[in-house]
Image (cartoon, rainbow, N blue to C red; front, top):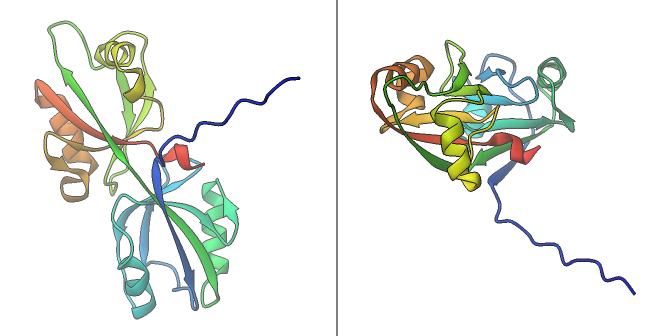
Amino acid sequence: EREDPVPIEAPPAVEEIRIRVARMPRGGWLCLDFLDPRIAQIAQPLGLDAPAEAILAMLRTGDFLMEVNGVREGEARMLAALDSAADKVAELVFVRPQSFEVILRKQSGIGLGIDVQREGIGASVMVAEVRPTGLAQVWNNTHPDREIRPYDRIVGVNGYDGAKVGAGGLVEVLQTHRELKIKMVRPRDAL
């Protein structure tokens, strides 16, 4: 007789925030970054009216919008769901991923080994690719529990917070500092 293995539950990687809005604000109250085509990150809360301000009081720059009225994954679909929910009841699901730290020390002749993308208005930098050579791959080989993956977001570097310095500020620190203490989040774990 075969026994099914007991599932081992990993600690939650994200904090889920479910918000039911009685009257969804019209567009323009939230600035979203869709670098990852499946989910949106709050780049800048704009809150122009009372309903928007009430929603934003529960959220932070850097949280991720995962679902609008049951619609998940896809910029066009999620934006259409937000537009169609204006002035109606809406169910929004946001997540606040837990961060993890990566420490890289630049060495002569060895690059970071990651390609990144950013939005001008963004509060983070998205890892587009981890190259097979470079400091990121060395880190991954020695720290499999905190490996750098495509779609991870860099939200801080050496104490600089992306919500304050923006994506451009983070890129500047990545390029100019020799030792990098990188704060990352992995929102895709919530998909």
